Amino acid sequence: MKSHSLTTGDQIDFPVIHDHRGNLSFIEGGEHVPFDIERVYYLYDVPGGAERGGHAHEDLEQVIICMSGSFDLVLDDGKEKKRVHLNRSHYGIYVGSMVWREMDNFSSGCVCMVLASRKYEESDYIRDYSDFQARSVEVVKS
Ligand code: T46
Image 1 (tube, rainbow, N blue to C red):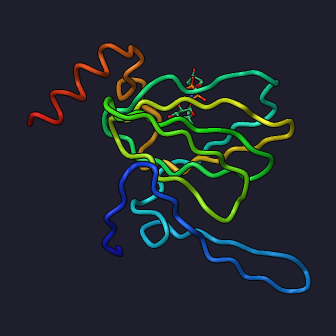
Image 2 (tube, rainbow, N blue to C red):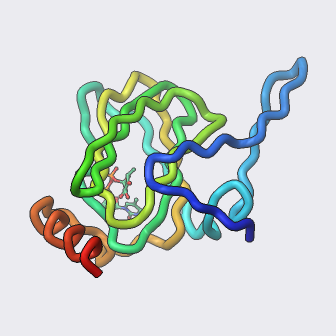
């Protein structure tokens, strides 16, 4: 696996192979994404005005990609908040563990694909913001 020094919010640019038939991008686990991909999921048919996320993960790492349309991703490490607008499928945003994420401003027809380092585990979710803040302070101290 390539060595990576990504921090949350970093953009990962995927290869783009362009010819007269259009574009092709590809993603290899451990090469373009800093973990072995254990799970892929996607969000689609999101109604206008909907908000998703609103939680953090204790251990999960993800790369979030906008395959079609657009949406905003808000990343909060407990100290600072950053809003990123995603609207192209040739890059993804790295989201490490212990980051509160929210997603909104979905366009019609938006498709968001997420590459994840672990299988789905409800026990990895932190769904209470004050709990997240208290735990992110502990992470900084340790
Ligand atoms: C994140 C954003 C971008 C599963 O059964 N398997 C799965 O792999 C996932 C992701 C979810 N679920 C179930 C758990 C809930 O009952 O699907 C339901 C909706 O999940 P959730 O409310 O977590 O969905 P989002 O869109 O708010 O958040 C998801 C990811 O959980 C989260 O890690 O970063 O997408």
